[in-house]
Image 1: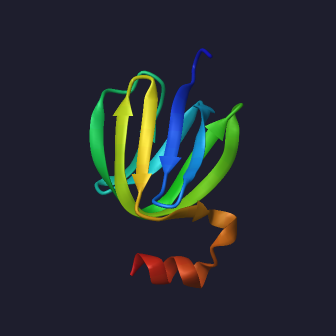
Image 2 (image 1 turned 30 degrees about the vertical axis):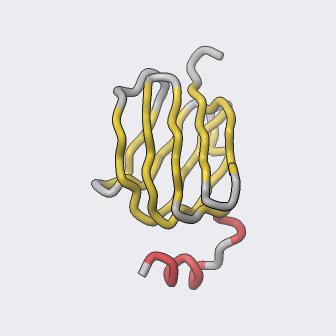
Length: 100
């Protein structure tokens, strides 16, 4: 698919996501980082926060992560999260507790 890359999100429990996406915004330790097709290769540490996934020109999914690492290459982004769950399944109080 032109204009997409493979995004994989893995937690210790399971593979949460593996599909072609247009863009992902990840909570890198240095700040929010947008990943697009053709991105320069790098490995970054993640802080707790939300991964935002874009498909078909719109945000399609939001996932809470509690730290980890991401490996980015021109055609793939693999996120190895310490803990991950869809944002809809996490209350504000629970997210704040996990991030503190």
